[in-house]
Length: 169
Image (cartoon, rainbow, N blue to C red):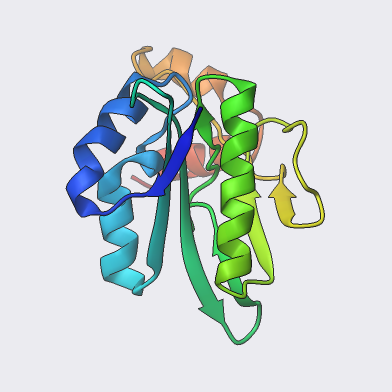
């Protein structure tokens, strides 16, 4: 038996404790990002937590209601972030969370749900969700010495711009 609820700012510590322990969480999942987006852009947040029968959080799903003349009224999972996976302990929790988000969509007369993910998701309603797999995140270990770090860059504009800066500086 699972229960899902939309959290408010009083539940931020519960949310943060879950995401800080989850291996796929990012800075964008933190409640501070939620506060930043709400304050800066005025978007209404819809942060869902799924609890099991022991009242433990087993999934979290962060969304914002975004209204635009260009794109209409839609739910966006973590605007202004590269990716925003639903964080869950298991596949069943992901499925239940998706179903709850769809119900919320129907209650708010929203045309689309945009979810930007790192990897493909199985068993979801493709008619209701717009899944974006095209966002890329580049990770580079910064503890390396500068010369080894520079060699990790692909031969692109990045290397060219660094060399140009070093010549000019």
